[in-house]
Image (cartoon, rainbow, N blue to C red; front, top):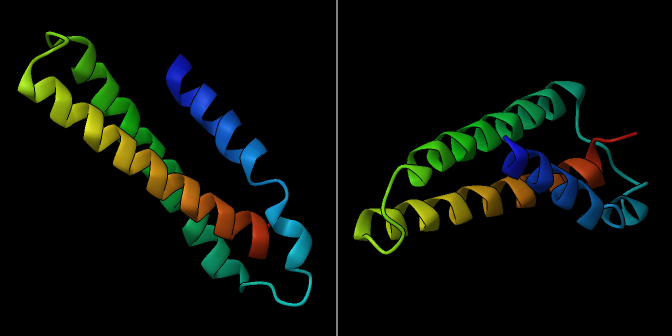
Length: 90
């Protein structure tokens, strides 16, 4: 859980600048709500993978696959967060 909180903090702090260039257009509220839900679900999925990763031997093939999947999921969440910050957040 600590990892997810840290990830959220990093995602939101790294995308704070993105909103400064988007004052011309905002997404509809429904789209923003769905995007927010998608971000939360991605982070929850990454958290679930962390739980399984902690139970695996560090150098195992399965451990490496889980770590890559966590990286991929958090990268997508980060990208979605950038869009959310730029076009949805007030």
